[in-house]
Length: 439
Image (cartoon, rainbow, N blue to C red; front, top):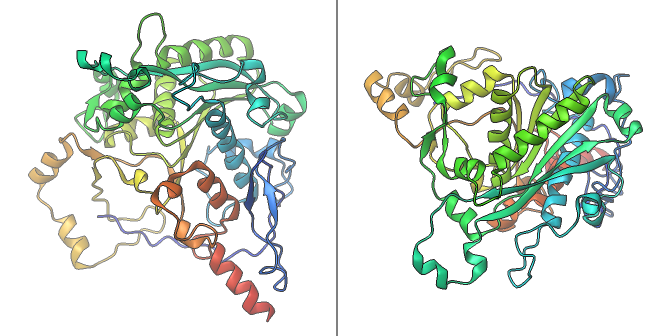
């Protein structure tokens, strides 16, 4: 059992920078620091309809100068708690590409285009409500279920047995001004969450399975003997193909190969953003392309409401690759707590070397070695990966008391990010403190 006593910076009451707006949707941001107006009005701003105008992090350095920091090269040290305003904008900006994937997907089973993208590549972002991102969609992506349906499934409605469906896209930054603002040419892979019946069934295949060629991957050694393993259903959706349709894995590999040939001599980053199922596939994608391509540019995952993906060995391999993962988690979202369970016996805090001396910690530390090995070798032990930005619907007046489904919604995540201050000073507590100070 791991206990943490990490020091947290005091509450920051500095007004945030302007957030990048998102078309046709308004969210509540942190209000101006006026105690008289904080209750009488809420500033409604769209999250992203144009490129972010933020160019300074408060310390005199622009995003272009610090882009590696905001992409996690130092594991977002000092940027998450309290949440840095430029990082906030970047998180919301990447989340908005996933929002575009949702808006472009045809959810209506009665539509002839069910499970396909509703727009052409050239018009996808603009038709989805994001006309001025500076990016162009270069490839559509589909995911295929590897589940073999029984014969009686032929009698069910066609929409229930769709095996391959559009799940997202690859987009490359093409606007010179945006490239200059970002400090590099950025490639985005955006992946939506679960939509089809077979995708739901794949989510239920929660036992761990070894990655292909896992033995070669384990060659470098590690803390876990069993090698990297991931959730069976996620791996199936990533690697399966049907008929002439490519697997998601092959499509992404082909597009990354093409992009590296065209832009490989430029400063380049690859950012994979996904929600729910898309967040899990984003982590698999990052792992796979880092294994496949040598001298790959910086790879970052922005994960929203993602489930667990793999075992401790998988996490170890991700870290050795240098893949950076930022998991945005709503503590009230049950999807982030599944599948399987997590065991962590490290009772030493890596930041301040503090050990909590209580009965439960001592008990967990003394669990016999045979039991630990037995548990670690099961197909149900998962590991959380990357760095975590933990939010809570209960801390937001506009989201407190919402349903479980709403807690998992991508729009809820983007709203919470836009208003979050710090772990010891969330939205509601901040407002009360400001009001009491101004009374």
